[in-house]
Amino acid sequence: MINRAENSCIGIIGAGPIGLALAARLAGFGIKSVILDRSAHLLPKGSKACLIQGDALEVLDKIGCADPIAEEGIHWRTARTYIRNVERITQEFPERAGYGEFVNISQYRIEQELLAWVENHSLVQVCWSHEVIGYNQGKNQVTVTAKTPSIEKDFNFDYLVACDGVGSTMRKLTGVKFNGYTHKDRFLITDIKANIPLTKERHFHFDPDFNRGRQLVMHPQPNNIWRIDWQLSPDADIEAEKANGKLDARIKAVIGDIPYNIEWLSTYRFNQCVIEKFKIGNIFFAGDAAHSFPPYGSRGMNSGLADADNLAWKMAAVLKGHADESLLDSYHTERFDAAQENLRVTEATIKFMVPPTPLKRLVRNIKLSLSVLWKGMRGQVDHGKMTQPYTYKQSALIDTSDSRFVGQFSPDVAIFVDGKKTRLRKLMGQSFLCFYVGELQGLAEFSKQAELLNNYANVTFVAAFPVGDEIGQVPDNIDVVRYDDILFFETLKCGDRSMYVFRPDSHIASHNQVSSGMDINQIIACASGCEAIPVDMAKAS
Image (cartoon, rainbow, N blue to C red; front, top):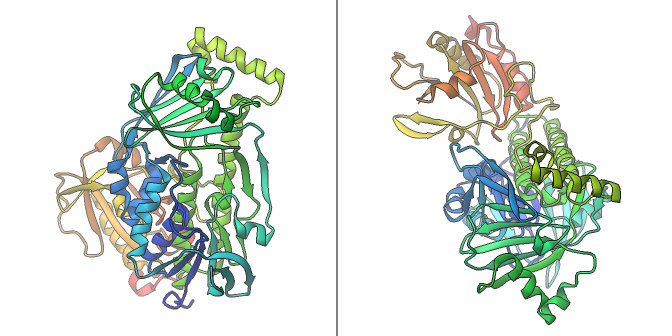
């Protein structure tokens, strides 16, 4: 396989968070990209997506722009659910290493940080005022025609990725199906600046006095801004409410009679849709161009960032000659499955929050009434399961034959490198990671396996041992980290000589017991889509 990375270029349509993150991840692998966006510049969009989940923030950490977002955002791990004005369900998410569970911050701020990063990188070019109007796909490239204020221009790309949102131009041009539906109910979303006397956490209301028979959710944002999202009645006219003062009454019914300022306001109907194919030849779809979900659980941007992280390392592997083109087919397999799982979860939530028939509404209301009196019924109240990374179960790149952790996004824990405290996930992002946790006697064989690796893939070998353990001379081809969380690593061990393979997108590809009988080349070939190169028998002996 030929390394063509130096002369390659990826086209990305859309300078939103997904397109920008994809360009940045590709640049980290040494791959050039050009972003085409029809807007004249980055546009403020209110809060739009208003929450980044901690694992999705890890994608931005691989780029190098997570810390400003984490420092500015509102961290929370308590979700409060109210039924008819009384808090009935309190969901506590555990504390954990890294960025925590959820960080509330506007999508626009995330875009600003990503844009600042890509504009300072030589491998990324952002072309504003470039509206894609046509394309032609050949065997080895995609030609895109973009209209600017003055001329039409053609661009030639090795691959093209549509990150141009729910109204995707490329989806329309290709004719690929966007299966699903748009919900009939309308919602009002506002960003309100006010000193609201509430804990800065998620507050979800079923049937409150201020939105009878419907739902309302509140999310805090930095700078005393609150995202408030109303499910509207069919006869609600927000434009009329602005004029007659009812909008002011609507807002004050929620926040109280305190000063406030509306920073942003919009009405919308949400979609429940997934594209039929995430990949058509050399054209790919990511983010809202590939899937559009209701706001329940914050699955839109967070899932899109996982799309970008999944696709970036695979494109880099193919362009560098490390893997065959067929590796890119796994992008559809893995991310389509993830989108279908998101559909399943959100569909269940929709049916509870907005029952489709009078009978189902009656059943829902009975459950809500019973939950007021009986704690055991509160588990039946679906207030929106929060987003989490998908566990890949059906992918050919995942060996599910051993360990319950395989396919999952990497767990995280404090470790020590050269005496300095860091985290396990900090070891990931640029290469495959073979991570050994087990008895000291297995270290020599782990080192031997590193020597036997003939595979094209970029692989790092790391072994972990408890702080204070004497381990003697460490082989030159092995990096050693230390840990003091004994319980975590005992849980991670599945045998005396466990080796986990972590992908660049931090998902666990496989678990094996280190032994002379293992085939390290085949293990990495399976995980990376690379060709398994025969072992040098001189090394093996």
